[in-house]
Length: 138
Image (cartoon, rainbow, N blue to C red; front, side):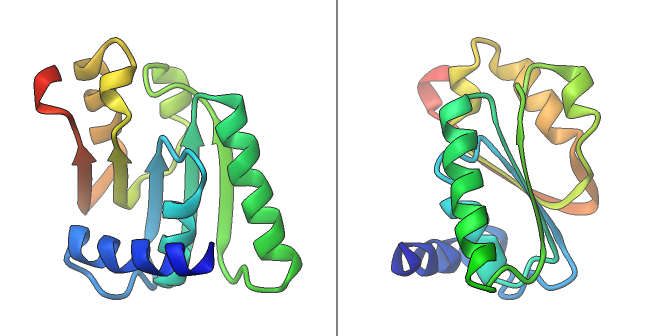
């Protein structure tokens, strides 16, 4: 698990072009298992917000967060939330992210463009957005 998170951390460095996330807020939209969120923490993100619409994914990410915290390795704020990227009211409650990540999620919502608009609103001024989309859906 940790080895996979380290590999993902190296990929995040490449995706965002930043080697150290210290002082940055990372928002993971469609967090799934939570491994990308954990990878952001390994890169020293000061704050991580993991969001997923699926209860099972939220439970898995929350379990990972609790384990990481229980062994004393959680050195930053890590919030795990359930909500839909299509729910504007929910999305407006999320903090702006210096780094916003959403991979392979928006095309599953049924309204790619509304999801994209809501995710884009999360990006802080001078922040960065990394999206993984399937070209067939665009």
